[in-house]
Amino acid sequence: MKPAIFISLGILVYAVFIVWHGFRSFKSTSESSEKFFTADRGLNPFVLLCTTSISVFSALAFYGAPSGIYKDGIGFYSNTGGMVAGLLFVILGYRLWLLGKEYGFTTPVDYLRSRYYSDGFGLFISIVLVLFIVPYVAMQLIAIGDAVVVTTEGMVPYVVAVAVGTIVVSLHIIGGGMGSVAWMDTFHMVLGFGTLITLIVYLTMTYFPNGGFAEAVAIMQQNGTYDILSCPGPNGTFNWKGMLGNALTGAIATVVWPHIFMRTFVASSKENFRQMSWMMPISYVLVYSPIVIIGAILAPAILGKGFAQPDNIVAVLSTQYAPPFIAFISLLCLFAFGVSTADSLLLSASAMASRDIYLHHVYELKGRTSDPKQVVKFGRIVLLVLMVVTLVIVAIKPASITDYAYKLSSPFFAQILPATVFGLFWKKATKEGAIAGTVSGLIVAIIFTFFITPPLGFSALIWALVVNTILLVAVSMFTTVPEEIVAKYHKRIDSIIYSGAELTSLTDATIASVNAKAADAR
Image (tube, rainbow, N blue to C red; front, side, top):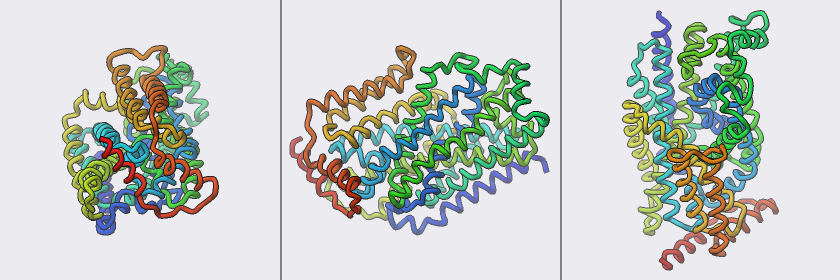
Protein backbone atom coordinates (compact mmCIF):
# COMPACT_ATOMS: atom_id res chain seq x y z
CA MET A 1 0.00 0.00 0.00
CA LYS A 2 1.31 3.43 -0.92
CA PRO A 3 2.11 5.62 2.10
CA ALA A 4 -0.29 8.31 0.88
CA ILE A 5 -3.14 5.77 0.75
CA PHE A 6 -2.30 4.50 4.24
CA ILE A 7 -2.22 8.03 5.63
CA SER A 8 -5.48 9.00 3.91
CA LEU A 9 -7.33 5.94 5.26
CA GLY A 10 -5.88 6.51 8.72
CA ILE A 11 -7.12 10.11 8.81
CA LEU A 12 -10.59 9.00 7.67
CA VAL A 13 -10.78 6.36 10.42
CA TYR A 14 -9.62 8.89 13.00
CA ALA A 15 -12.21 11.42 11.83
CA VAL A 16 -14.97 8.82 12.29
CA PHE A 17 -13.65 8.05 15.77
CA ILE A 18 -13.78 11.74 16.80
CA VAL A 19 -17.40 12.07 15.63
CA TRP A 20 -18.37 8.85 17.43
CA HIS A 21 -16.69 10.06 20.61
CA GLY A 22 -18.72 13.26 20.55
CA PHE A 23 -22.09 11.63 19.95
CA ARG A 24 -21.61 9.14 22.77
CA SER A 25 -22.83 11.89 25.09
CA PHE A 26 -25.50 13.37 22.84
CA LYS A 27 -28.47 12.32 24.99
CA SER A 28 -27.03 13.36 28.35
CA THR A 29 -25.81 16.76 27.10
CA SER A 30 -29.22 17.47 25.55
CA GLU A 31 -30.80 17.72 28.99
CA SER A 32 -28.74 20.58 30.43
CA SER A 33 -27.02 23.68 29.07
CA GLU A 34 -24.74 23.55 32.13
CA LYS A 35 -23.58 20.08 31.12
CA PHE A 36 -23.25 20.99 27.44
CA PHE A 37 -21.26 24.23 27.92
CA THR A 38 -19.34 23.57 31.18
CA ALA A 39 -19.33 19.76 31.69
CA ASP A 40 -21.20 20.42 34.96
CA ARG A 41 -18.09 22.27 36.21
CA GLY A 42 -16.58 18.92 37.04
CA LEU A 43 -13.22 18.66 35.25
CA ASN A 44 -10.31 17.24 37.23
CA PRO A 45 -6.96 19.11 37.22
CA PHE A 46 -5.20 16.90 34.65
CA VAL A 47 -8.05 17.07 32.13
CA LEU A 48 -8.42 20.80 32.78
CA LEU A 49 -4.68 21.29 32.24
CA CYS A 50 -4.67 19.34 28.99
CA THR A 51 -7.77 20.96 27.51
CA THR A 52 -6.52 24.43 28.42
CA SER A 53 -2.99 23.87 27.14
CA ILE A 54 -3.77 22.26 23.82
CA SER A 55 -6.47 24.84 23.13
CA VAL A 56 -3.59 27.33 23.16
CA PHE A 57 -1.26 25.15 21.06
CA SER A 58 -3.22 25.38 17.84
CA ALA A 59 -2.43 23.97 14.41
CA LEU A 60 -0.76 27.31 13.79
CA ALA A 61 1.58 26.63 16.73
CA PHE A 62 2.42 23.13 15.52
CA TYR A 63 3.24 24.34 12.01
CA GLY A 64 3.64 28.06 12.50
CA ALA A 65 6.08 28.06 15.43
CA PRO A 66 8.80 25.95 13.74
CA SER A 67 8.33 28.08 10.63
CA GLY A 68 8.56 31.32 12.61
CA ILE A 69 11.72 30.15 14.36
CA TYR A 70 13.31 29.02 11.10
CA LYS A 71 12.57 32.37 9.43
CA ASP A 72 13.11 34.84 12.30
CA GLY A 73 15.24 33.09 14.87
CA ILE A 74 14.98 31.52 18.30
CA GLY A 75 13.61 34.78 19.72
CA PHE A 76 10.26 33.46 18.55
CA TYR A 77 10.46 31.32 21.69
CA SER A 78 9.51 34.46 23.62
CA ASN A 79 5.97 33.55 22.67
CA THR A 80 6.17 31.17 25.59
CA GLY A 81 5.38 34.22 27.63
CA GLY A 82 2.21 32.20 27.75
CA MET A 83 3.91 30.29 30.57
CA VAL A 84 3.16 33.34 32.69
CA ALA A 85 -0.50 32.59 32.05
CA GLY A 86 -0.32 29.89 34.68
CA LEU A 87 0.46 32.54 37.25
CA LEU A 88 -2.19 34.82 35.78
CA PHE A 89 -4.67 32.00 36.19
CA VAL A 90 -3.71 31.83 39.87
CA ILE A 91 -4.30 35.57 40.29
CA LEU A 92 -7.21 36.22 37.93
CA GLY A 93 -8.67 32.83 37.26
CA TYR A 94 -9.35 31.88 40.85
CA ARG A 95 -11.58 34.91 41.37
CA LEU A 96 -13.30 34.20 38.07
CA TRP A 97 -13.80 30.58 39.10
CA LEU A 98 -15.37 31.72 42.38
CA LEU A 99 -17.70 34.05 40.52
CA GLY A 100 -18.62 31.31 38.07
CA LYS A 101 -19.47 28.95 40.91
CA GLU A 102 -21.36 31.61 42.80
CA TYR A 103 -23.41 33.11 39.98
CA GLY A 104 -23.42 30.47 37.24
CA PHE A 105 -21.18 32.27 34.73
CA THR A 106 -20.28 30.32 31.60
CA THR A 107 -18.68 32.84 29.22
CA PRO A 108 -16.52 35.99 29.45
CA VAL A 109 -19.60 38.00 28.51
CA ASP A 110 -21.55 36.62 31.48
CA TYR A 111 -19.00 38.15 33.81
CA LEU A 112 -18.38 41.43 31.97
CA ARG A 113 -22.08 42.15 31.41
CA SER A 114 -22.91 41.53 35.06
CA ARG A 115 -19.88 43.22 36.60
CA TYR A 116 -20.44 46.37 34.52
CA TYR A 117 -24.23 46.20 34.82
CA SER A 118 -24.69 46.83 31.09
CA ASP A 119 -26.61 44.65 28.65
CA GLY A 120 -25.42 46.82 25.77
CA PHE A 121 -21.77 46.34 26.70
CA GLY A 122 -22.32 42.59 26.96
CA LEU A 123 -24.00 42.46 23.56
CA PHE A 124 -21.19 44.45 21.98
CA ILE A 125 -18.51 42.16 23.43
CA SER A 126 -20.45 39.07 22.32
CA ILE A 127 -20.65 40.25 18.72
CA VAL A 128 -16.97 41.26 18.56
CA LEU A 129 -15.75 37.96 20.01
CA VAL A 130 -17.97 35.77 17.82
CA LEU A 131 -17.06 37.69 14.65
CA PHE A 132 -13.35 37.11 15.21
CA ILE A 133 -13.63 33.54 16.38
CA VAL A 134 -14.99 32.18 13.09
CA PRO A 135 -12.17 33.31 10.75
CA TYR A 136 -9.56 32.20 13.29
CA VAL A 137 -11.18 28.75 13.37
CA ALA A 138 -11.05 28.80 9.58
CA MET A 139 -7.30 29.40 9.76
CA GLN A 140 -6.86 26.26 11.88
CA LEU A 141 -8.73 24.22 9.32
CA ILE A 142 -6.86 25.80 6.41
CA ALA A 143 -3.57 24.77 8.09
CA ILE A 144 -4.91 21.22 8.41
CA GLY A 145 -6.04 21.19 4.77
CA ASP A 146 -2.69 22.42 3.44
CA ALA A 147 -0.80 19.85 5.51
CA VAL A 148 -3.04 16.98 4.38
CA VAL A 149 -2.38 17.89 0.74
CA VAL A 150 1.40 17.89 1.31
CA THR A 151 1.45 14.74 3.44
CA THR A 152 -0.77 12.69 1.09
CA GLU A 153 1.12 14.01 -1.98
CA GLY A 154 -2.06 15.54 -3.34
CA MET A 155 -4.13 12.34 -3.12
CA VAL A 156 -6.57 14.12 -0.81
CA PRO A 157 -7.59 17.42 -2.43
CA TYR A 158 -7.57 20.58 -0.33
CA VAL A 159 -11.34 21.09 -0.49
CA VAL A 160 -12.01 17.53 0.67
CA ALA A 161 -9.51 17.86 3.54
CA VAL A 162 -10.93 21.11 4.90
CA ALA A 163 -14.51 19.93 4.44
CA VAL A 164 -13.84 16.75 6.43
CA GLY A 165 -11.99 18.74 9.11
CA THR A 166 -14.77 21.31 9.46
CA ILE A 167 -17.57 18.75 9.61
CA VAL A 168 -15.69 16.54 12.08
CA VAL A 169 -14.96 19.44 14.44
CA SER A 170 -18.53 20.70 14.34
CA LEU A 171 -20.20 17.30 14.79
CA HIS A 172 -17.88 16.44 17.68
CA ILE A 173 -18.99 19.55 19.60
CA ILE A 174 -22.64 19.16 18.64
CA GLY A 175 -22.60 15.65 20.02
CA GLY A 176 -20.80 15.99 23.32
CA GLY A 177 -20.25 19.63 24.26
CA MET A 178 -17.54 20.62 26.74
CA GLY A 179 -17.15 17.18 28.31
CA SER A 180 -16.31 15.47 25.02
CA VAL A 181 -14.11 18.37 23.97
CA ALA A 182 -12.11 18.25 27.22
CA TRP A 183 -11.52 14.50 27.19
CA MET A 184 -10.57 14.45 23.51
CA ASP A 185 -8.24 17.39 24.16
CA THR A 186 -6.55 15.33 26.86
CA PHE A 187 -5.93 12.48 24.43
CA HIS A 188 -4.70 14.94 21.80
CA MET A 189 -2.29 16.55 24.27
CA VAL A 190 -0.67 13.22 25.02
CA LEU A 191 -0.66 12.31 21.32
CA GLY A 192 0.85 15.65 20.32
CA PHE A 193 3.68 15.54 22.84
CA GLY A 194 4.48 11.92 21.99
CA THR A 195 4.51 12.68 18.27
CA LEU A 196 6.89 15.62 18.61
CA ILE A 197 9.32 13.56 20.72
CA THR A 198 9.12 10.64 18.25
CA LEU A 199 9.89 12.92 15.29
CA ILE A 200 12.82 14.54 17.08
CA VAL A 201 14.34 11.21 18.19
CA TYR A 202 14.06 9.71 14.70
CA LEU A 203 15.53 12.71 12.87
CA THR A 204 18.36 13.09 15.39
CA MET A 205 19.35 9.41 15.36
CA THR A 206 19.10 9.18 11.57
CA TYR A 207 20.79 12.38 10.42
CA PHE A 208 23.05 13.23 13.36
CA PRO A 209 24.12 9.82 14.70
CA ASN A 210 27.57 10.89 15.85
CA GLY A 211 26.88 13.96 17.94
CA GLY A 212 23.13 14.58 18.18
CA PHE A 213 22.21 18.24 18.60
CA ALA A 214 25.90 19.24 18.82
CA GLU A 215 26.49 17.73 15.40
CA ALA A 216 23.41 19.52 14.04
CA VAL A 217 24.61 22.87 15.40
CA ALA A 218 28.05 22.31 13.81
CA ILE A 219 26.32 21.75 10.47
CA MET A 220 24.35 24.98 10.98
CA GLN A 221 27.65 26.86 11.38
CA GLN A 222 28.74 25.48 8.02
CA ASN A 223 25.50 26.00 6.02
CA GLY A 224 24.86 29.59 7.09
CA THR A 225 21.86 29.04 9.40
CA TYR A 226 23.63 29.51 12.74
CA ASP A 227 22.15 33.01 13.16
CA ILE A 228 18.78 31.33 13.78
CA LEU A 229 20.10 30.55 17.27
CA SER A 230 20.76 34.23 17.98
CA CYS A 231 18.76 37.32 18.85
CA PRO A 232 17.54 39.45 17.17
CA GLY A 233 17.78 36.64 14.58
CA PRO A 234 18.53 36.59 10.84
CA ASN A 235 15.99 39.33 10.05
CA GLY A 236 16.44 41.48 13.16
CA THR A 237 12.88 40.70 14.23
CA PHE A 238 13.46 39.79 17.84
CA ASN A 239 15.17 42.67 19.54
CA TRP A 240 13.97 43.31 23.09
CA LYS A 241 10.89 45.19 21.87
CA GLY A 242 9.94 42.42 19.46
CA MET A 243 10.43 39.81 22.14
CA LEU A 244 8.40 41.84 24.66
CA GLY A 245 5.50 42.19 22.24
CA ASN A 246 5.66 38.49 21.38
CA ALA A 247 5.80 37.49 25.05
CA LEU A 248 2.89 39.75 26.04
CA THR A 249 0.83 38.44 23.14
CA GLY A 250 1.42 34.89 24.34
CA ALA A 251 0.66 35.67 27.97
CA ILE A 252 -2.41 37.82 27.41
CA ALA A 253 -3.94 35.72 24.67
CA THR A 254 -3.69 32.63 26.83
CA VAL A 255 -5.92 34.15 29.49
CA VAL A 256 -8.49 36.23 27.62
CA TRP A 257 -9.13 34.27 24.47
CA PRO A 258 -12.81 33.29 24.84
CA HIS A 259 -12.25 29.53 24.82
CA ILE A 260 -9.48 29.82 27.42
CA PHE A 261 -11.47 32.28 29.55
CA MET A 262 -14.29 29.73 29.69
CA ARG A 263 -11.89 27.16 31.15
CA THR A 264 -11.79 29.20 34.35
CA PHE A 265 -15.40 28.21 35.02
CA VAL A 266 -15.19 24.42 34.60
CA ALA A 267 -12.87 23.15 37.36
CA SER A 268 -14.51 20.86 39.91
CA SER A 269 -12.96 22.56 42.98
CA LYS A 270 -10.63 25.36 44.00
CA GLU A 271 -7.88 22.84 44.72
CA ASN A 272 -8.20 21.38 41.23
CA PHE A 273 -8.16 24.84 39.70
CA ARG A 274 -5.01 25.85 41.55
CA GLN A 275 -3.25 22.59 40.69
CA MET A 276 -3.99 23.22 37.03
CA SER A 277 -2.76 26.80 37.26
CA TRP A 278 0.59 25.88 38.75
CA MET A 279 1.10 23.05 36.25
CA MET A 280 0.50 25.23 33.20
CA PRO A 281 4.05 26.63 32.95
CA ILE A 282 5.37 23.05 32.99
CA SER A 283 3.02 22.04 30.17
CA TYR A 284 4.21 25.01 28.12
CA VAL A 285 7.85 23.99 28.50
CA LEU A 286 7.09 20.35 27.68
CA VAL A 287 5.21 21.12 24.46
CA TYR A 288 7.06 24.19 23.24
CA SER A 289 10.59 22.86 23.75
CA PRO A 290 10.25 20.11 21.09
CA ILE A 291 8.71 22.66 18.71
CA VAL A 292 11.71 24.95 19.23
CA ILE A 293 14.18 22.09 18.70
CA ILE A 294 12.56 21.30 15.36
CA GLY A 295 12.50 24.90 14.14
CA ALA A 296 15.83 26.10 15.58
CA ILE A 297 18.11 23.07 15.16
CA LEU A 298 16.78 20.13 13.16
CA ALA A 299 15.11 22.00 10.28
CA PRO A 300 18.07 24.37 9.61
CA ALA A 301 20.60 21.53 9.82
CA ILE A 302 18.63 19.19 7.53
CA LEU A 303 17.01 21.62 5.09
CA GLY A 304 19.74 24.26 5.01
CA LYS A 305 19.38 27.96 4.34
CA GLY A 306 16.61 29.49 2.24
CA PHE A 307 14.24 26.51 2.26
CA ALA A 308 11.49 27.33 -0.24
CA GLN A 309 8.54 26.07 1.86
CA PRO A 310 9.16 27.30 5.42
CA ASP A 311 5.47 27.07 6.33
CA ASN A 312 5.55 23.33 5.60
CA ILE A 313 8.69 22.46 7.56
CA VAL A 314 7.06 19.86 9.80
CA ALA A 315 5.12 18.29 6.90
CA VAL A 316 8.26 18.07 4.74
CA LEU A 317 10.43 16.65 7.53
CA SER A 318 7.74 14.09 8.33
CA THR A 319 7.04 12.95 4.77
CA GLN A 320 10.40 13.29 2.99
CA TYR A 321 12.84 12.61 5.82
CA ALA A 322 10.94 10.09 7.95
CA PRO A 323 9.09 6.79 7.35
CA PRO A 324 5.33 6.71 6.56
CA PHE A 325 4.32 5.84 10.12
CA ILE A 326 5.94 8.98 11.50
CA ALA A 327 4.41 11.01 8.67
CA PHE A 328 1.02 9.62 9.67
CA ILE A 329 1.30 10.35 13.39
CA SER A 330 2.70 13.83 12.62
CA LEU A 331 -0.35 14.58 10.53
CA LEU A 332 -2.53 13.20 13.32
CA CYS A 333 -0.72 15.52 15.69
CA LEU A 334 -1.46 18.53 13.47
CA PHE A 335 -5.05 17.32 13.18
CA ALA A 336 -5.20 16.98 16.96
CA PHE A 337 -3.81 20.46 17.64
CA GLY A 338 -6.07 22.07 15.03
CA VAL A 339 -9.22 20.20 16.07
CA SER A 340 -8.64 20.90 19.77
CA THR A 341 -8.34 24.64 19.21
CA ALA A 342 -11.12 24.83 16.63
CA ASP A 343 -13.68 22.87 18.68
CA SER A 344 -12.97 24.94 21.80
CA LEU A 345 -13.31 28.20 19.88
CA LEU A 346 -16.53 27.11 18.19
CA LEU A 347 -18.00 25.95 21.50
CA SER A 348 -17.23 29.34 23.03
CA ALA A 349 -18.84 31.10 20.04
CA SER A 350 -21.90 28.87 20.38
CA ALA A 351 -22.11 29.59 24.13
CA MET A 352 -21.96 33.36 23.61
CA ALA A 353 -24.43 33.34 20.71
CA SER A 354 -26.95 31.10 22.47
CA ARG A 355 -26.60 32.24 26.10
CA ASP A 356 -25.40 35.85 25.88
CA ILE A 357 -27.34 36.94 22.84
CA TYR A 358 -30.32 34.61 22.36
CA LEU A 359 -31.12 33.48 25.92
CA HIS A 360 -30.33 36.76 27.66
CA HIS A 361 -31.98 39.15 25.24
CA VAL A 362 -34.92 37.02 24.09
CA TYR A 363 -35.82 35.46 27.42
CA GLU A 364 -34.13 36.86 30.54
CA LEU A 365 -34.56 40.58 29.80
CA LYS A 366 -38.23 39.99 28.96
CA GLY A 367 -38.89 38.01 32.12
CA ARG A 368 -39.47 34.78 30.19
CA THR A 369 -38.36 31.37 31.41
CA SER A 370 -36.25 29.27 29.07
CA ASP A 371 -36.10 25.50 28.84
CA PRO A 372 -32.50 24.18 29.32
CA LYS A 373 -33.12 21.73 26.47
CA GLN A 374 -34.10 24.63 24.24
CA VAL A 375 -30.86 26.48 25.04
CA VAL A 376 -28.79 23.43 24.12
CA LYS A 377 -30.84 22.95 20.93
CA PHE A 378 -30.24 26.56 19.94
CA GLY A 379 -26.53 26.19 20.74
CA ARG A 380 -26.37 23.22 18.38
CA ILE A 381 -28.19 25.15 15.67
CA VAL A 382 -25.66 27.95 16.07
CA LEU A 383 -22.87 25.40 15.65
CA LEU A 384 -24.43 24.16 12.40
CA VAL A 385 -24.62 27.74 11.11
CA LEU A 386 -21.01 28.38 12.14
CA MET A 387 -20.02 25.14 10.40
CA VAL A 388 -21.52 26.32 7.12
CA VAL A 389 -19.91 29.77 7.40
CA THR A 390 -16.55 28.20 8.23
CA LEU A 391 -16.87 25.77 5.31
CA VAL A 392 -17.36 28.67 2.92
CA ILE A 393 -14.32 30.52 4.30
CA VAL A 394 -11.97 27.54 4.21
CA ALA A 395 -13.17 26.47 0.77
CA ILE A 396 -12.58 29.82 -0.95
CA LYS A 397 -9.60 30.65 1.31
CA PRO A 398 -9.97 34.45 1.07
CA ALA A 399 -6.61 35.99 1.82
CA SER A 400 -8.12 39.24 3.11
CA ILE A 401 -10.32 37.57 5.74
CA THR A 402 -7.70 35.18 7.04
CA ASP A 403 -5.02 37.87 7.09
CA TYR A 404 -7.22 40.35 8.95
CA ALA A 405 -8.34 37.69 11.39
CA TYR A 406 -4.79 36.67 12.20
CA LYS A 407 -3.54 40.24 12.64
CA LEU A 408 -6.48 41.41 14.73
CA SER A 409 -7.48 38.33 16.72
CA SER A 410 -5.01 38.65 19.60
CA PRO A 411 -5.16 42.50 19.78
CA PHE A 412 -8.97 42.40 19.71
CA PHE A 413 -9.40 39.61 22.24
CA ALA A 414 -6.83 41.26 24.51
CA GLN A 415 -9.02 44.33 24.89
CA ILE A 416 -11.26 42.59 27.41
CA LEU A 417 -8.26 42.18 29.74
CA PRO A 418 -8.33 45.65 31.38
CA ALA A 419 -12.07 45.43 32.05
CA THR A 420 -11.57 41.95 33.48
CA VAL A 421 -8.61 42.83 35.72
CA PHE A 422 -9.98 46.12 37.03
CA GLY A 423 -13.41 44.59 37.47
CA LEU A 424 -11.91 41.92 39.72
CA PHE A 425 -9.61 44.09 41.81
CA TRP A 426 -10.76 47.70 41.65
CA LYS A 427 -14.06 48.60 43.26
CA LYS A 428 -14.28 51.91 41.36
CA ALA A 429 -14.18 50.42 37.85
CA THR A 430 -17.41 51.60 36.21
CA LYS A 431 -19.52 50.70 33.22
CA GLU A 432 -18.62 53.96 31.51
CA GLY A 433 -14.90 53.38 32.07
CA ALA A 434 -15.05 49.81 30.74
CA ILE A 435 -16.93 50.86 27.60
CA ALA A 436 -14.63 53.82 26.92
CA GLY A 437 -11.49 51.74 27.45
CA THR A 438 -12.59 48.71 25.43
CA VAL A 439 -13.91 50.63 22.43
CA SER A 440 -10.86 52.92 22.29
CA GLY A 441 -8.55 49.91 22.53
CA LEU A 442 -10.28 48.26 19.58
CA ILE A 443 -9.98 51.44 17.51
CA VAL A 444 -6.27 51.83 18.33
CA ALA A 445 -5.64 48.18 17.43
CA ILE A 446 -7.22 48.70 14.00
CA ILE A 447 -5.36 51.96 13.32
CA PHE A 448 -1.94 50.63 14.34
CA THR A 449 -2.47 47.36 12.50
CA PHE A 450 -3.53 48.66 9.10
CA PHE A 451 -3.00 52.40 8.81
CA ILE A 452 -0.16 53.72 10.99
CA THR A 453 3.09 52.07 12.07
CA PRO A 454 3.02 51.76 15.89
CA PRO A 455 5.43 54.29 17.47
CA LEU A 456 8.61 53.37 19.37
CA GLY A 457 8.67 49.89 17.91
CA PHE A 458 5.98 48.47 20.20
CA SER A 459 3.16 46.35 18.80
CA ALA A 460 -0.42 47.45 18.14
CA LEU A 461 -1.56 45.14 20.95
CA ILE A 462 0.60 46.92 23.53
CA TRP A 463 -0.48 50.41 22.45
CA ALA A 464 -4.13 49.39 22.39
CA LEU A 465 -3.88 48.01 25.93
CA VAL A 466 -2.17 51.18 27.17
CA VAL A 467 -4.90 53.45 25.73
CA ASN A 468 -7.60 51.06 26.96
CA THR A 469 -6.26 51.04 30.52
CA ILE A 470 -5.74 54.81 30.74
CA LEU A 471 -9.25 55.60 29.55
CA LEU A 472 -10.86 52.96 31.75
CA VAL A 473 -9.19 54.40 34.84
CA ALA A 474 -9.74 58.05 33.87
CA VAL A 475 -13.43 57.71 33.03
CA SER A 476 -14.07 55.51 36.09
CA MET A 477 -12.68 58.22 38.37
CA PHE A 478 -15.49 60.54 37.29
CA THR A 479 -18.34 58.01 37.39
CA THR A 480 -19.88 55.86 40.10
CA VAL A 481 -20.32 52.14 40.69
CA PRO A 482 -23.62 51.00 42.27
CA GLU A 483 -23.09 49.77 45.82
CA GLU A 484 -24.85 46.52 44.91
CA ILE A 485 -22.11 45.72 42.42
CA VAL A 486 -19.38 46.44 44.95
CA ALA A 487 -21.10 44.15 47.45
CA LYS A 488 -21.50 41.36 44.94
CA TYR A 489 -18.16 41.38 43.16
CA HIS A 490 -15.75 42.54 45.82
CA LYS A 491 -17.04 42.27 49.37
CA ARG A 492 -18.67 38.91 48.75
CA ILE A 493 -15.68 37.37 46.95
CA ASP A 494 -13.16 38.84 49.40
CA SER A 495 -15.09 37.33 52.29
CA ILE A 496 -14.94 33.91 50.62
CA ILE A 497 -11.21 34.16 49.88
CA TYR A 498 -10.06 35.51 53.22
CA SER A 499 -12.42 33.59 55.48
CA GLY A 500 -12.40 30.28 53.67
CA ALA A 501 -16.18 30.32 53.59
CA GLU A 502 -17.96 27.72 51.56
CA LEU A 503 -19.66 28.77 48.37
CA THR A 504 -23.40 28.96 48.54
CA SER A 505 -25.99 28.82 45.85
CA LEU A 506 -27.15 32.40 45.47
CA THR A 507 -29.81 33.86 43.30
CA ASP A 508 -29.00 36.67 40.91
CA ALA A 509 -31.43 39.02 42.57
CA THR A 510 -28.83 41.68 43.18
CA ILE A 511 -27.79 42.07 39.56
CA ALA A 512 -31.40 41.89 38.48
CA SER A 513 -32.10 44.80 40.78
CA VAL A 514 -29.23 46.79 39.32
CA ASN A 515 -30.35 46.08 35.76
CA ALA A 516 -33.89 47.14 36.66
CA LYS A 517 -32.61 50.43 38.08
CA ALA A 518 -30.54 50.99 34.96
CA ALA A 519 -33.56 50.30 32.75
CA ASP A 520 -35.67 52.74 34.74
CA ALA A 521 -32.96 55.39 34.41
CA ARG A 522 -32.96 54.95 30.65
